[in-house]
Amino acid sequence: MKTFPAALALAAALILSACYPPTTSHPVGTTAGLKSDPALSGLWVGKDADGKPGYFHFLPQSDGSITAVIVEGGDKPDADWMIATLTTATLGDKHYMNARLTSTNGKTEEGAPSGTVPVLYRIDAKGTLTLAMMDETPTKAAIKAGKIKGTPGQGDMGDAEITADPTALDGFFKSAAAASLFDKPFFTLHRVK
Image (cartoon, rainbow, N blue to C red; front, side, top):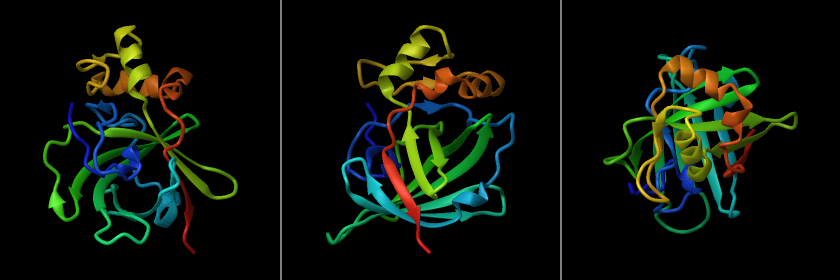
């Protein structure tokens, strides 16, 4: 099991250690075109599923990616912060981020998976941004059932990786079957004005 120190702390909801969520060997949405979603740009504040505060600053880059600076909220000294590189894509009515952790607390991230972590995101009519990641158990089940090509990893908490080629990956992630792999939102955010 690979450890996941605070950073797609997104996924671990800003905790210092957890397992990496399932990854993909290719970014989701490659065939549809990866580009920066302007709806994400700017500073967002919110709470994770456990009620812990956090800040996400999405900074569009000239290469079409987004740099995300994620800072743990609250009043504790030495709050954790991390930087991730994101690409975004839309498949049907679903919006995905492909996240790759680059550093935590100013140190280059070592031991991170080579693929990307898919994040399903939604901005509702009130401007609330929700982020959800794939749940390990149904993802492993989908791989084992042959619904999508991948490796389920070792044991119950092994790191599942979806290895389907971009065309098959995007076809799957456009479907309702893929949406069922995502757990409830781990972060709910509102834009800082």
